[in-house]
Length: 524
Image 1 (spheres, rainbow, N blue to C red):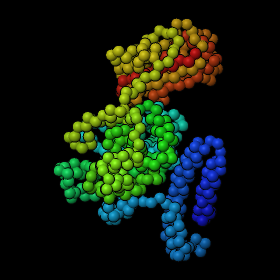
Image 2 (tube, rainbow, N blue to C red):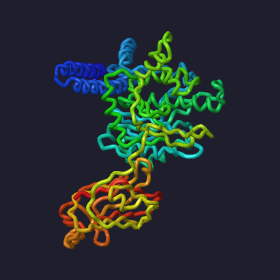
Image 3 (spheres, one colour):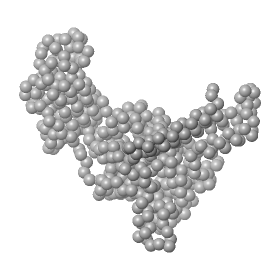
Image 4 (spheres, rainbow, N blue to C red):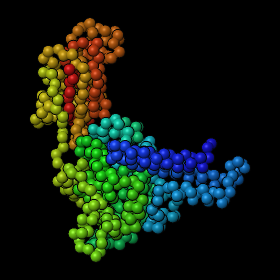
């Protein structure tokens, strides 16, 4: 095994190479773009270096614990101390949680999360933190996660991780949330896009001894104190996973294209001074931080976790950093505005009505969010349309096919269908169907196939004999060419099928939800 000294030298050399690259690119004509690329590479290198340092420290600890070992594995006490000091210099600063949460000293490892689902993904651009707790009325978690995943591209899904923090210690509730996420979003869990964690049973202090402040009743003081600890725990876990951290809630919807919008805005302000970016105007929703700043922020939150709500504490950090007590409030607000940048229109909207604080109703809406795009229209070849699925109100199949609206139908049953019969046979090149939309993402097609009816009978016979690898037989002369996955069906149509008379979406099992078709595109 290569010694940790060699790995450390490799890491230092890697950073030096990046520094030299930065100097070299400064000579180029496209300086801002080149500097941006170098800066991004340095941030990624820092993330990888932190992960490597953590692993090296673990190895060092294992070596130190081997008090009696073969001579080739033993290290002297002085050497061990020196190596540990060097490694700790490489590690990001960590808030001393034991000072502010002294009860943690009684239970080793109380700050370590219990990871229930996920692939422990690291090195991404965005880490989205979604804390969730038990609600007496309604859970919005699955809809929130589906909204965040709704229109992410394949590349974007590889560059993001959504950490769901179940901020409860009741094992029954935690397991129920884990099962719900696993059942509703299996692909996202399997690929590592979604992780589900929970705290140690010993993480939370005794909330019964909290001091009541600001005239709030004890239950509200407990609620806001626990919320501060929840955010802090989630931030500590997220800091080594990516370059930027975004704080969200479990009862929000995201605007389509939020990932691209956030990255583009980050690029615009990359070289400027700021502590956080605001992608929503409500409370603590949509606040983006550099993960390198999280240790300092968490330290501040923990220091005053019993005193004030989280959004007040965040504002106080700004005050401490830039406000001059000898100058007026206007000057202070102007200075604070430099450290928080508001992006408009807002990318996240609060939708939950029932707060996690029992009895509290939240009619909070972000006026800067605007309206969502609920469907996407395309030009499609002339066709007659029919369906066995009953439409809801004016959301007809005809309007969806013409690009004027989305189709919304009542709960599909087995053998239900949507049939598109072309006015004249078409040489169809490809297709795209999207079910659900950003606000009603759960109303999707499940266990549904895409089928075509070839104009040539000889083609149908070839499919029946298994001579065309593109597809397989269905019924009524149709052949199956694809199916819905994660609410979408997309593909090319093999030219060997010739001209197509009709296309059909066929449901193969009873559904538990309604169905919404927000995009239909027949490429000819």
